[in-house]
Amino acid sequence: MIKPVSLILVLSAALYSGPSMLAGQKAHGSEDQVLEAERQRFAALVSADVPALERLLGDDLTYVHSSGGLQDKPTFIAPFKTGKPRYAAFTGEDMKVRVAGDIAVVNGMAHVTSIGADGKPQEPFTIRYTDIHANRGGRWQLIAFQATRPQTAR
Image 1: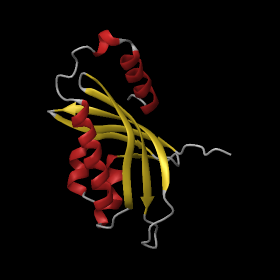
Image 2: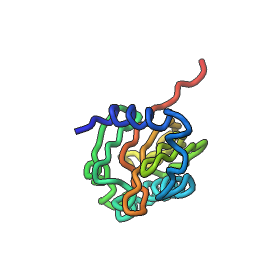
Image 3: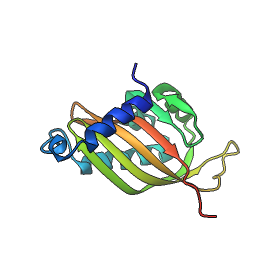
Image 4: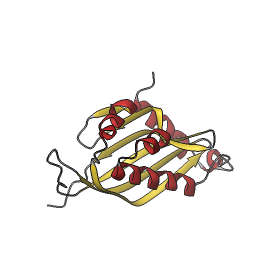
């Protein structure tokens, strides 16, 4: 089994190996399609739309939260099945997409407001993230996500 960090390193090497690697390799999708999948995922997180999450997340998902917690797809989706949203807001910013064949890497920032155990929105926070999408049957699915909270200026 490939570990998430190994997968990110291999994909990064492929994407940064030069223009010849990327030339003409957008056969199954474009940056716009990947960004739309990102927007749909953010909306599904806020609305606790389990069918949308099932469709947008690959079965082999590894999801590393900004807290360092690691989840697979079933573990990540399980809390949403209660019908209670876990996020009051999840919006992307400064998202950059690089497509190489059937793989796309997205770097961006997201502004997140989670919902606490008391059902109330928590203090908003910002994450920087890298995620990897795979084009499977013409549909982009998230297969790896890793987030970190940027340090603030002191």
